[in-house]
Image (cartoon, rainbow, N blue to C red; front, side, top):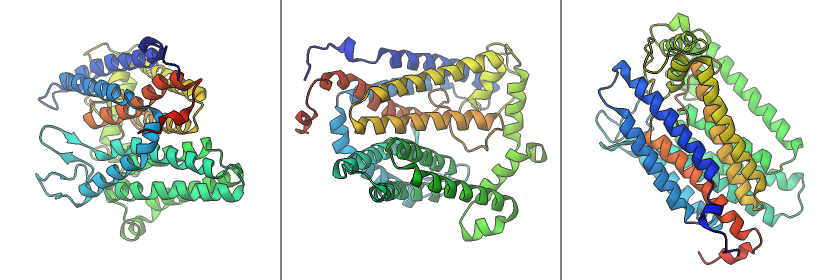
Length: 397
């Protein structure tokens, strides 16, 4: 163990600086978004509070070392599944603790805050997958198609349980995030492309078939496969929003008008003119596009690029496979959220209700992202400590 490294050398100041920039962007966007008067609440102090809570989570998680998270992985995964189970069986009537929102029973309404357990489950799921893959490679030092099939089966078993609970809510957007995490870790795990390509082809075929059936076989999907009508409406309003301009297409049309009206340089801070519902949460990018135009929106996208680039660089530095898989899952989570959120506000992708990480208002999203980044900070903080040492010294936990 190299104990001569001080805190300043081990702390990831670059990542902390990027998070500070995101905080500034988030506060400015939310401050402008609430001028529409949709809510009689000032969300800026609340968002600053959630950023403070996120910073506390990161500081707490830095105390533990990566090997300790590896040992806790299954306990955290089980705790997350247990909470999802409680959410499923909790009373869901009007005014109840688990009252559905927008047709999905995804939240605990606790009075002082609304908590979405699936946001935390993403990080627990990443830890469980990373533990599964690293343990498999320890058990099977000689890889073959057979061992890769065994690993793929283990991965899908870990995915199946949380996915079943999330689809039951139903929350298709979050379910897609879990698929993105799984796909990233499968690729990084080194599973043979002779297996990955056929599996990807099958998944692509199933996705295409579901999209076709959503357009032409709605009764079969709703009655036999359990899909909800609101999910079909989002597909239709995505493909042809102007035919649903008074209903499900209203959000998208408003977002397109807002972003388009910003043109190159935008209208300036607090000079929005287009009303976009929920513009402080899922549609925060439309505020950025209208007020700061193409230039401002591009700056925000570049900021996400720098974040993902920095996380990727850290991943390549990791010597421990478990840390590599965890970082890959976190990168996949953030990347998918960014692509999906910006894509849904610009009609590139269907609307799924996924927030823009670190910018959209939301306590659950902020705490879930803080859990993920806390793992990264911990791995960076303890990485230099063990770069010349023996990992086996961590078995006391």
